[in-house]
Length: 426
Image 1: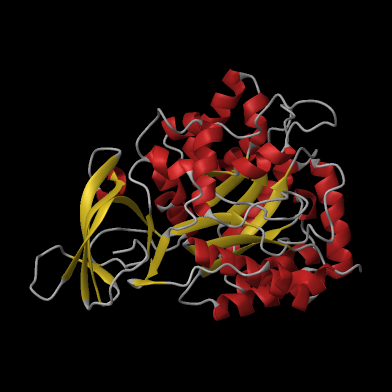
Image 2: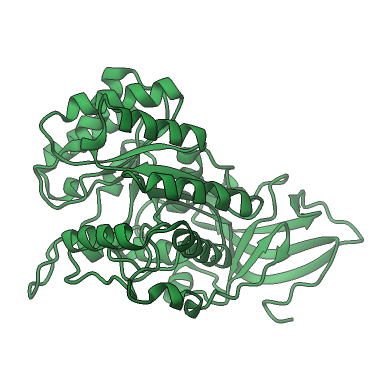
C-alpha cells in the first residue's frame, strides 16, 4: 500500500508509529506506539474484529501544529514591495509604505486567506497573528480578521494580537479605542517594546488596560542586537509591579544574545518569576539581525532558548513573517520551523521534549486546545515519511500526510499566481 493511501474505514488502527515520548507521557525521545481512529477521534487501542490494521513502518506522527506568532496581514507582498537592503529598518519602512498605499480590506483578506490555506495544507490547526493596528489600519484589518476567523472555524482556530509601538500606549482616546476593538474581537493586547524614557509608565498603562478588560498580552520585544535594549526585563518587572494575572508572551528577545551573560540570565530569572513565556522566531531573526552590506553576520539573532527552558520558562517556536520585507521566504510550515530551529538553536544533543515548543507550549500560552495523541483527542494528525529525527529533518517532508478528523486532506498548496493582480504597481 502506498504511504498516502489510507483505506476508508470506520475504525482504523495505525500500527508501528513513532512519536516524541513526552507527548505520550512516556520517557524517551521517539517511542513506538499504535494509534486507533474511530469517528474522527483517537480511541483506546483495544483490538476489535471490525478494525482495519495498517503497518506504518515506524513513521513519525505528531498532532497538528500550533503557529503562535505570524503576520498574515503582511504576508505575500514581497513581489510588489521587496526589502531594498534586507535590513530591519528597510523592512519597517517598506511595510509602512505598502500598508499606507495598498492595505484595503480586499487586499488584506486575500493575502491572509492565501496564507491560511498554506498553513492548513502543511498541518497547522491554530494560528495567532499580529495585526498592524496603528490608526486608521485597525478599522480595516480587525473586521477582516473577524470574517476570516468565522470562515476558518472548525479548520484553523484563529487569534489576533494588536501591533503598535510602545509609544502609542498611553492615557489617550486612541489607545483606549484600540483596546476596545481588541476586546470586542476576542483578541490579545500587544505592543512592540524598545527603549523609551518612560517605558515603565507606558507598561503600567498597558497592563492596567489589559487587566481591566480581561485581555492577555503578547509583545514584540528587543528585536535588535543592541545589548542596551533591555525591555524584556522591564516587562517582567511590570508584571510583578502591577499584579497582572493574564497570560504574557514575549517574542524575539534578540538582545539577550548580545548582553553580558550575568545580565541576560538575571533577566531570565525575572521572566521565570513573572510567569512569562518566550517565543523564538529563528528564521526571521537570522534573516534580519546583524545584517550589514558586504559583511558576514557574526550573530544568530535568536534568543536564549536553552537557558530559558532550564529556568522553567515555556519556550515556543513559530513562523513569524512570510514573503514580506521582514522575511523573504517561508510558508507557515511548522515542520520547516521545527527543522530550522533544531539547526539554528542546537536543539539536537539536548533535552528530549523540544517537540512541545511547537505543540503544547504554544497551545498553553495562547489558550488553544492542547494538541494530543491521547484517546479522546481529535484525530488531527501529521504523519511523516521518516523514522528518526535525522530522516525527518534531512528532507522537507513535502509528502507528509495530514489528517483532520481522521481523514486525509487535500494538501495541494495555493498557486502564487492567484495574487498576481495584487502585485501590480500601486
